[in-house]
Length: 181
Image (tube, rainbow, N blue to C red; front, top):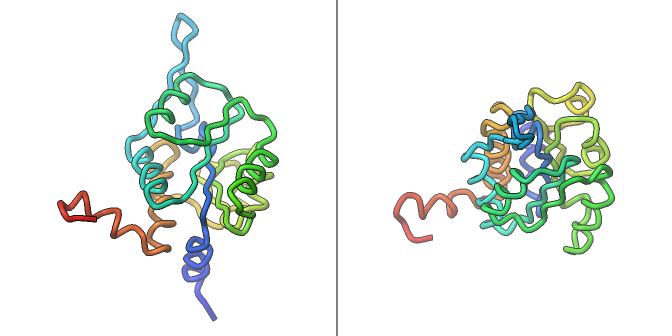
């Protein structure tokens, strides 16, 4: 009989495309408004590097949010995330189409969400993930819950789980150690 950790690692090793929500996953979920009506969001650099590491490993990264946000567009643009879709209420058909366009299926997919708009995708992907602050409905469906908080390293933690399970993390670490990749 395999352990839950072994089962999780097996699922994680199959992932070729991973999607993320923004508010409550890449951020702590708070919305900050300036007096001029501008919106500000805080993104953790560890999460940004997690997204970059996934991309470097050849894992397709997708970000889908129900909210449109200039701050989100800017940050994800800085990170070079190719599949950024903001202002999308029905996330599941879009994620499925992106995966299909890449020749992938739900069995190749993971998703990290935190609230009701993410339930459709989370119920279909091979590896549904979330943060500890997620809604009870999401927590019930997740196979993995981050130890780090939303907007505070949870995405990086999930990225490392995927990369370690696929045996790709050490090679990605080499340049930071001064070694050739």
